[in-house]
Image (cartoon, rainbow, N blue to C red; front, side, top):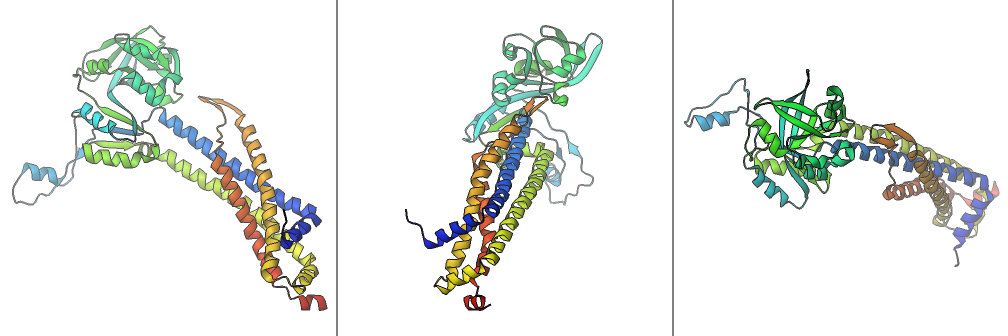
Length: 414
């Protein structure tokens, strides 16, 4: 394959200054490898914390929320021409149960974005074992759907979660509850709700999410048993939990559900605002570090090409005197920058992958986190190469432009 004269000259200049070429390539390599490492770390940790939050939080939770009194309520009550004025409005307690919950669920399932829907009966309770009591809450669920939505099985430390469907008055408790009340699988525990009579239930399983607030308060029961615990009928449901194919669409779908149902639809972003804020802050910090690294690499290339121009100034003058145009000279030095960028990119990808892999083997052993979470996301590698090459082209353009303006007569005479 025949290459152009400009390319041959660019290769010659690179080969004649091997050390400078290697140093410039190492700068690009370091910038790209750090870009890959930082992005892998950021995405890996973000994915881990999002997964951890979804272990107990649905993408959308539909429930009845207390409302603040407003003038519309007065207008509907006093249907006359008088002007209604409401001062110091108070919240009006709403019934916790949803109207026609299973009809709502059937309508929700028609949405193609929805992958899982499950009803829940939430009850504030008091656990008693012997003389020890503990406040908490019972979630009445269909355990098969709950497991599909939150992967409860992976958190099980004792017992079988499916025994909730087989054992009358079965209860799946958090490890914190089990530790505080000295309970094991097969033991009995008395559960008393705010309404209804105390019920003796049997522990069929123990789970641990490593989230203290959940493990020390929450237990699971069959949804029918939770309704019995509260003295409610089979249509009583307090929450509907929804998971989507893409959780990023949760805010929009939640707003649509509020309009359709009239109930409060809380998406996972609302319930994890601090977590999302932490993601954004971490992204800004890491991207700033990556930007500085690539900027330093760009200055290195700029300085090396500048030095090349000063050293080759007479050769550049001869090239122009023999008929090379300004754009041709720019092409020569820009090609040098591109080749430096490509060499650095290839080595940087290999080095960045190696660092990411080695760091992903660092053992953490905290809670459910065994190893440092790292992501091997292919678009990060593509982005790294693009950013690296763009940086080198930008760094090489100004010295190349400077070389193109050399006056051969003045240089040769001087």
